[in-house]
Image 1 (tube, rainbow, N blue to C red):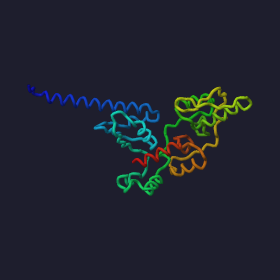
Image 2 (cartoon, one colour):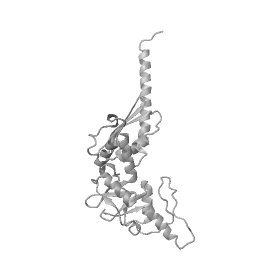
Image 3 (cartoon, rainbow, N blue to C red):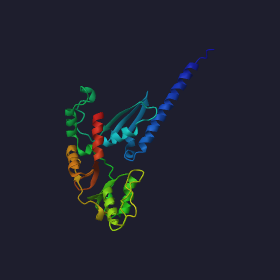
Image 4 (cartoon, rainbow, N blue to C red):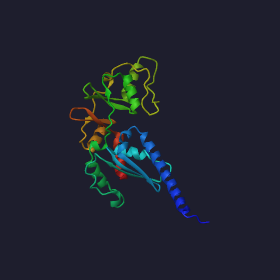
Amino acid sequence: MFIPGKKDRSFSNLRGSIQRQDEEIVASAQWRLERHHSLKDHLNSLKLSFHSGTLRVTGQLPSYYLKQVLQTALRDLTGVDRVDNRIAVTSSKGLSNFPSKSDTLGGISMIILSDRLSQLRVADAMTRDVVSVSANSTMAEAADELSQQHVTGAPVVDEHGKCIGVLSGSDFIRLKAEELEDTDKRHVPSFQHPEGCYGVDDVMHDLVRSRMSPAVQTINENTPLMTAARCLCYEHIHRLVVVDKHSKPVGVLTSLDLVATLIAIFEE
């Protein structure tokens, strides 16, 4: 028996079911992004939508590193066939004039890639959420701060906020090795923290200023990215502290930031 309007209600129920499924996928994606410490302060500038298997992300992020973090966070999401990452990197300069991968035969050529990299500045790739350590903190306090912030190194600042050194996991290893120098023990701190940070046992109450590396490598955010990359390579270090004209930290550039930037350029 034909009931007027029944077919319309069935289609309406189906559309409602699909819409709820799409909303659940978006909520799941949002939850994943919220779990990342480096992304939590930028969620308001992002918009997520889902349709026909494609999760689209639009908005702005301040670095290529964060864009890559977002891409990784949304990988293998249930119900998502493809992530359409349309995030704009707000600090990038002069990149819109370059042809995209679809505009070149066989993908981006090495010449185009080289031109892109030559246009980038440190500001395009650095991490702006700076975690710093006070020079007057104890090494135990510094270890707690690095562990809570999920980082393995940080710039050291004086009472005026000026960068006067850098503290990294290797400084804790040297400290522990010195403690054990005159004993029969032959071990250094284990790396058992669930986030991969350095675990420090029985650390002395030395101040950070007495154990930090004072020969800190600093750089300006307008420095060409390739210059910064060469500095990391030549000095055999993993991070550069980005400072303003008052020598106050405004960012950190790590070897991971460089890798993430390179990946993002290839995937554009």
